[in-house]
Amino acid sequence: MAFLLENDGKRDMAAKHNKFIALGSRLKGVPEVLTLGVHPNFFDYSPGERELILNAQVILFPTLNYAQFFTTMGKRIFPSLETYLYSDEKTKQTTLFYMLGIPHPRTRIYHRLHHQEIQKDFPFPFVGKLPRRSAQGRGVFRINNPEDLNRYLELTNIAYIQEYLSHDRDLRVILINYKPVLSYWRVSAPQDFRTNLFQGGKICFDDVPQTGIEVARKTARKCRFDDVGMDLIHYSGKWYVIEANMKYGRKALKKKGMNLKEIIRQTLISGELLDKRYG
Picture 1 (cartoon, helix red, strand yellow):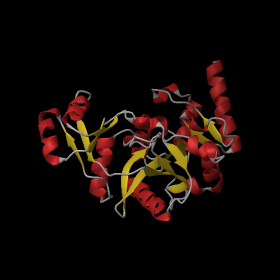
Picture 2: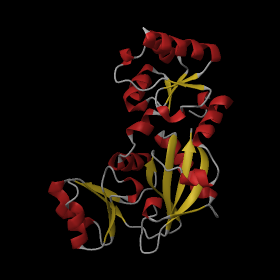
Picture 3: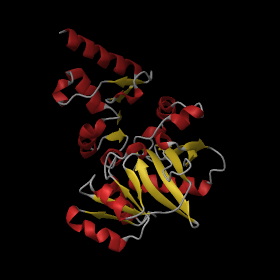
Picture 4: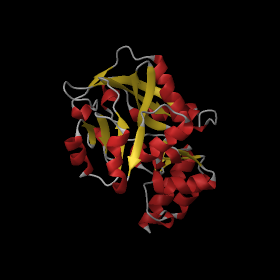
């Protein structure tokens, strides 16, 4: 009974103050947002909470489980279903980039029976990545010779092989609701081709080209990634989209004195998050 009374109190508070409804905890503590939590079963929510969810204009951070249901129902969510579906899915992102005509380094995927074809298709050096769970630069390898390749193939049945584009930095563009909010270079550490901050890379805010930001913006829009960090490389006069990171870091935001919760809060208050021109 106490549980029902507490949840009915949440419902009354949300109705009284016209709060936005969130399931995931990303906006917990934001005064305009009522965070209900994520339950495995819809009927784990109280009747009052279910009413709030079903009547809300937008559901914030619904998680992948609920994002697909709300999208099928035609309900507006943030982030988008695509943002959830392609998170930590390098092979799916590559296929999507190619199908949408987004510039992307030459990349092929090989199942175990076809591993012997890799050296026929790619000259050394090239890049091998673990198709999943390779965040923060872990699971990303520069492969210089057959010995490196064999060590890499011991780690995965599905080989994700990408041409190596020589670079000492890449461009990270963070976009919220398709709007760039911060852009910066990630400069690789000496003797390491990876630019990830966890691998010794450094943040640089100087001389970020608008052309790169615009490529990131158009890519996010085409892919329907509305809460994302897009990574790009400028090579031989052309921008290449490397990947989309839905679990982008906060270090650069903090260095700029920016608060992600406040950024999203302002899109809510301004109505931008509900404006169909942006969504």
